[in-house]
Length: 231
Image (cartoon, rainbow, N blue to C red; front, side, top):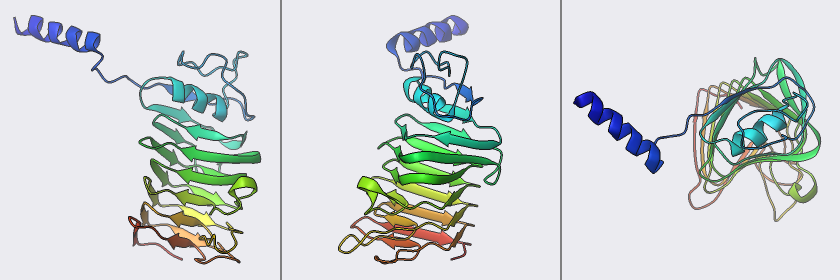
């Protein structure tokens, strides 16, 4: 009787749509940006059997549940990455797996969305990394980013009021903000949300025309907690 009860209960949950969707795992096999041929089928494929970082993110956004994206060693040339569904993107190490913005592109995390970057390096022509949700950088590196174009008055990393940014065991190095007054910004991070930094290194970041060589913390709800890190 108990088994029958639990079976019926599971069916009711499934029909009502209250069972959490299981995420998918996508494995990148191509280093240049491509679009997914059929977003939502939970298969990372540009139509030719190729799965790039951009293909995988596009499919992860459309596929229900929190997904994983495995990125192999090498330099991956990416275009704009807009994360609208929770995802973990992991590489083989911050000096081994590199996401290089091949042009002036931006990286954004939507509000109420969780994104984790593990063992990756972000570099190249990113206009800015903008977090509105929860963004975690673990064993990661952000280096050589100077916002440009419509993001010229941004910091390389912008944590919005709705954002939670968690940086651990990571290196934030050689980034620059060219924002000019009154748009003062930090050389690495402009924080107006919640920022936690643990066991990380900030070096060679600059804001020649603004303020805050590494971090500018401002806003009514802005908060920063830093432990075991070097600046």
